[in-house]
Amino acid sequence: MDKNHTTFENFQLLEEHLTSSSSNLLFYENAFSKIKLIREIISKQSLPVLYIDLDFLFSGYVKSKLLEIPNLTLFTTLDSGINDLLPKIFVKLSEEPHLVIFDSINGLYNTLSNDADSGRLANSILMLLARNVSFSDSILVILALAGKKEKDWILPNGRQILENNEIKKFTISDRSKIIFEN
Image (cartoon, rainbow, N blue to C red; front, side, top):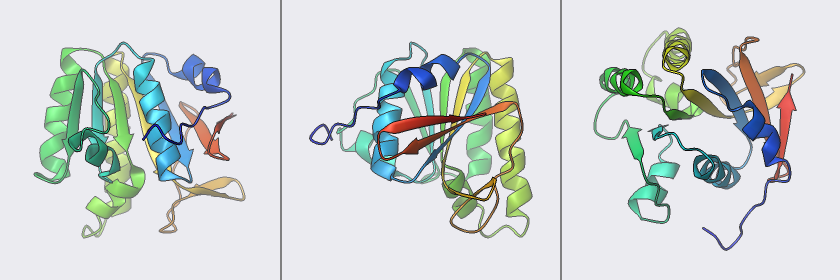
C-alpha cells in the first residue's frame, strides 16, 4: 500500500474541521485514495476508531494485514445484517468517544437494496448515527462515491444525497487535493 503513497496537499483543512460532535461527508472518486486518506485521518487521531465497512475494501486491507490499526473496532455486514450491527455500534458510542468512519453510503444502499423503502431507511440510519455521535462527543466521517450534478451530490445509482447545514462536506479531487464545501 505504501508504494504509491499519496500526500494530501491540504490535509490541515480536513484536520481543522474534524472536531468532537461533528459529522462530515467525504466524497471521493477513487477508492484507493479514499483508503489512503482514511489511513492518514486515523493516524492523526487519538480516539479509538469504530469503522463500519459496508463496501469491504478497508476490511480486506485489515484482514490481510496490509493495514494495522491499533484500537480499531471493525463492523461489517459479512456476518450479520445492519439491523444487528446498529445496537452494537450505539453501545460502543455510549461507552466513550470514537472516530466513527461509515464506509460507505453506497454500501449502505447495496445492503438495503431489497427493501422497498431503502432511501428513507438509509437516511434514517445516517441521521440516527449522526445524532448518537453528537451525544458521545465523537467524530463521524461518512464516505460516499458520488459526483456533483449541478448543485446536488448524486450517487452512481442516481440517488441524491440529502444534505443539511450541520454536516461538513469535503471532496478528494485529483487523488490528492481536499476541497471543503461551504
